[in-house]
Image (cartoon, rainbow, N blue to C red; front, side):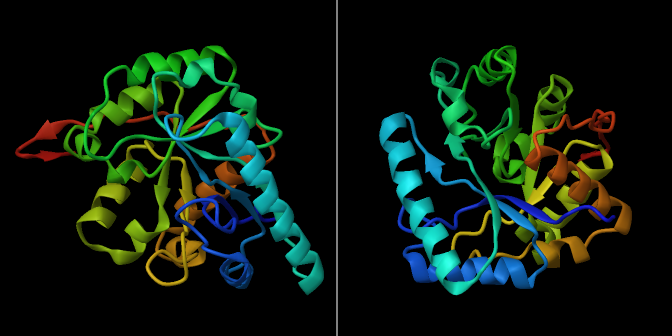
Length: 251
């Protein structure tokens, strides 16, 4: 049986963050996921420790999920889904109840790093999370300038037990980002491919299109990894290759 196509990072719940603005948009995006052959999703609304308590976040997420589940039942749309979060990096992360933020029923935790600066203490926070039995998933690693400029950072995090996720749009658009992502794939530094969908205009569900842009072996590996994470099974990554800077480029 072929592996499932699962979107582990998407902002489809209504009115909870900068993703789907209302229930109509949620349903439109879910239908697009289904049309693209996506078998299951993880709802990952943004969580910012400095902006909202964990309790309020969980309550808002549960309310949005109930609305979505009710609309799906009413329309006959069948969707396999888990609740999760995209957790913005904070040094306080290891002190929080990570079971609320991890993908439901699993020990996987999706973490977003800042795009405008390289925060100190990433390694310490990732280590502390892993000491609690959780596997950090680093969201859309192609979006961090300090990583693209110094990919050995990503190599070190992955070698220490983190998992890296990339967005499908980077592969679809082509150009520099696609070349970079293909290097990451060749170096075994990325493990999950997700849509990070927010709307139907600028950031729509597009997971199928990204898989079509990949070699069959890479697509299969991403699907297998996604299935392992969704079901809470151990993900055994390929041995990472350390990038080397030679003749003005990373190879």
